[in-house]
Length: 521
Ligand SMILES: Nc1ncnc2c1ncn2[C@@H]1O[C@H](COP(=O)(O)OP(=O)(O)OP(=O)(O)O)[C@@H](O)[C@H]1O
Ligand SMILES: [Mg+2]
Image (cartoon, rainbow, N blue to C red; front, side, top):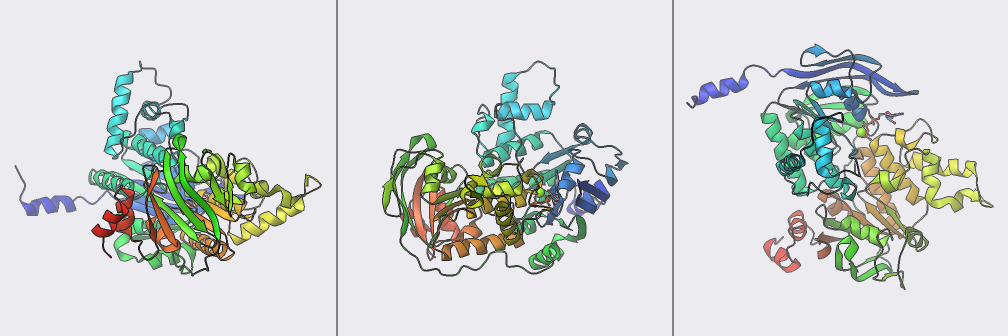
């Protein structure tokens, strides 16, 4: 029998939401780095609780302590009303905690279905493996997150965004009551983000508590019920999302006001830097791609995940060579390897910084000088002084948060690793720079600095190819925007023509003419 409306609303108001998790005064040091000075946080049943703060503020460290991946030095953790004296990943899982980490962590040589099964059954599972059931389960979970990914694909063949979707499916499959999401949308675009949000709403409705970390503030205002702000290892404020403005949040995070997207300055457009005519690359799924970029121009590449943006970048940089020739500063050439691309003045900052961006075991100094050994060496030997000067210059100008330039890049927070990847390529003074998601995972303050840096490069005459999943970013920064769909360009929009609906229409495969007719300005 349906309840009368009044009783129904009273039911919803009572009882007050239960605390699923309470972290109090958590501290953590890593060999002299105070990652957490004092972090306290309460997560309620059925709430989306955002955790925000600058790069290196301690957000990921706090989530790893909650999942038992690392242990706290001091402080208490209470889950479902009980103090957990010693946490570890098994205990956390048995208490209903699931997490999506900032970096996907799939086993590359296993299939999607095997990765999901392993996460749900635990590595020590001794039951007979029922492959059909595993495949069906993986398909179900993937479709619940709006994905039609083939469960039999090897994880190694997935793009970063596809890997992230598998991570999300894994966490959902665990039926957790506490879900920690560390930048789940950093690699996703429009439709995937919408799918994830409807999923989050569904879980919240079912009483799951969601801790949500993101640098995309517009997302936070859309989805969060409450927001905790971290600064320098401390949780400094907790607010109702409805009661706080975006500029207040930025002020709380960075202690000053910042424009989240740097205003674009007009830069004189110079000579043709790169021209691509009817490029075909079947192994990368690309066909019939034509465009040109001039020096000083910022050329945006938009499109959905899997549309071919990264493949195009990899082709231009010689990582997935094609037989088509391209023209670089007036000279026709074939680029077969990154070395040839670099020799032609092309640099590429990839989205997957773990694979091609930086070497986690090596120091920040070595990572930065790696692409530019000639400037730090003399008579074929590396001069440590020069290497240190170069590294210090870039760590200062990009505000890379570290205790020392010699620290291993792997000890940096996610956003600071991204800055090291960028610094490495700036050091070779390229003429054509391909930036694949350059502000992914970067905080608002640093994002504005990276936008300013891109502007300065354009002013110096560098031709920039900018790939970004964030439409506001690509709209604000680009002179022209090419939109890809299924491996080809469906349209190129001038700055005046470019709007979000037009980009989305082209991204879904509509033609330029239909798009312009359907979305008049
Ligand atoms: N294993 C480690 N060894 C040394 N230092 C570490 C280690 N892990 C984290 N840190 C340091 O702890 C601090 C907090 O890092 P954390 O990854 O928690 O930041 P974050 O808030 O998640 O940042 P981001 O937004 O960039 O992801 C940083 O200064 C980082 O360099
Ligand atoms: Mg982090």
